[in-house]
Length: 176
Image (cartoon, rainbow, N blue to C red; front, side, top):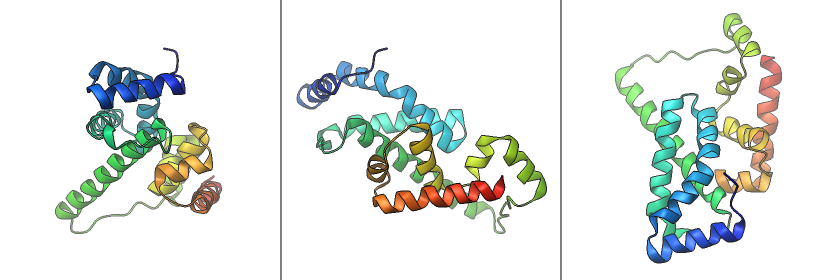
């Protein structure tokens, strides 16, 4: 499918807002679903979870499309919703695990076996990063997003994004 132009995208959004046009929103979903699912898969490391989070993100976007002001690109707004869904999921899972596990065991990537595995597997390497660093790395290197846009998605300052990328590179060098 051919990517939407900014004008076509704006027209679809307008149809969603004015006429509650579900077909128009369906076109937006078709356009952005592969990239959003890839982002969430890389972030979560689980295809089923990525699909669920993507679906939840599109539902939230549809329900709140009237709040989209067009200050940023629709894609940036949608990725922000998806990132929030991922953060909410991880918080909820952390709370659930804390309820069931009185003595949580922290994994130590410096362990020789884990270190070897990280060298061979990029996914493991990314998973070793804190969520905010992993998100910045995925958006910058895999989605080829500019720092300014990453800052909007993550709702942080541009300098913070640069710092996150720098720390992530440093940590990956140490593991490598």
